[in-house]
Amino acid sequence: MNNFIFENSTKAIFGKGCVKEYLACLLSHYGETVMLAYGGGSIKRNGIYSEIMAVLEKAGKTVVEFSGIMANPTYVKVLDGAKLAKESNVSLILGVGGGSVMDCCKAISLAAKYDGDIWDDFWVQPGVIDFEPLPLGVIVTAAGTGSEMNGGAVITNEELKIKTGRDYPKCNPKFALLDPIYTYSVPKKQMVSGAFDTLSHIMETYFAKPDESNVSDDISEALMKNVILNIRAAIRNPEDYTARSNLMWDATMAENRIIKLGKQTDFECHQMEHQLGAYTNCNHGEGLAVLHPIYYRHIYKYGLTKFKQFAIHIWNIDPTGKSDDEIALEGIEALADFIKEIGMPSKFREIGIDTDTDLKAIAYSCNIVPTAYKKMTHEEIFEIFKECF
Ligand code: NZQ
Ligand code: ZN
Image (tube, rainbow, N blue to C red; front, side, top):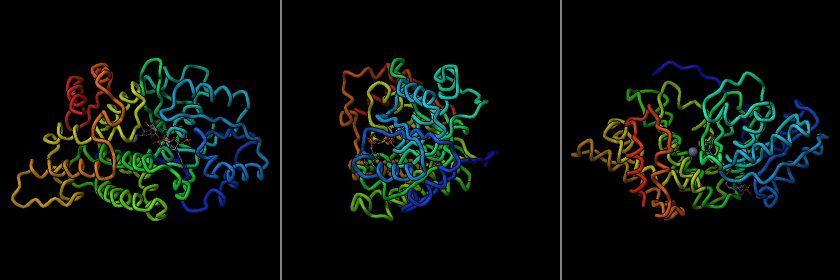
């Protein structure tokens, strides 16, 4: 394993009823004014909003609402939120939602305490955060991104057509409340998309060096099997608590830095999806589902040991009498079949990307990850995009 330093400052509180039980106590560490940030209104329809408001009122907090955080949150929205937080003298941001709300709130927490331009100083390139962002607590309502237990925030600059993420430990939420029951109302399409995003995070971490035995890859294998099993169970019964609770914690585990310890990572598929998102506003998990099998057919020869292991350990491919290439390719086919089985798209057309889209411009705007098994070129990304039709 490679050397590492591990730290994760988020207090995660998990389980049925955790908001009612612990939110008041958590709030007591912060001042009077809380900014309640959320998305397009699902929390009002499913009762989560009233449950949280009751706790805030009982705790005597002044609540400033910031709503309308969209999927693929924009930099403009971040600036709006920061302005409101500053004007209202907010002492805690409470983000209630999925990855988009959590990411937007992390960026707001920085922008509210910074006089310069956070996009230029912290997103265009990595910056040094030598100040304390506004404290942020999150209540997860849609599992998938794992944003609740890391400092990552993916923001879209619509003007520049760039969607990019950075992970700053100072942006880790102070606390994350995870009640699996809150995810019951997530529509099936989004539930599957979130769970596939989790699977993608694990694969993007697993498919990189080292290839020797290491505990991070072993944990990743256990997580991948768990996600696959529980996506199927949650599709069969959306109110299967065991399935929803496993998927929720799988998502957190995939992105709380633990499975990355001692390893390099890939995440080229994420780079490609982020730029597709910047140009087309496609759904994150769905974009990843289209890209993964095609990308893996391009790179498997460069990570043959791991792709073979993936086929045998995750998809139970029988290796008898087969070459390493055959085994690896059967594993990738099993992944592609699973994507179809769970109702996810396999082609760009299915996610609203048509032949008029300037794929070349998107391909050439993607970041290239140097630690992937095979370092992509922009031309090869363009080839992959064309194969996605
Ligand atoms: O906006 P509302 O009305 O709340 O509806 C949301 C939204 O339409 C809905 N939803 C959430 N909880 C619900 C619910 N509907 C019913 N019941 C509930 N309990 O779900 C829809 C999608 O929400 P969103 O937050 O956009 O989805 P997701 O969690 O997949 O987040 C996607 C964003 O996270 C970024 C993605 O790029 C994308 O911008 N990512 C963040 C990462 C990180 N910070 O570590 C890593 C990821 O790789 C990813 O890039
Ligand atoms: Zn993702």
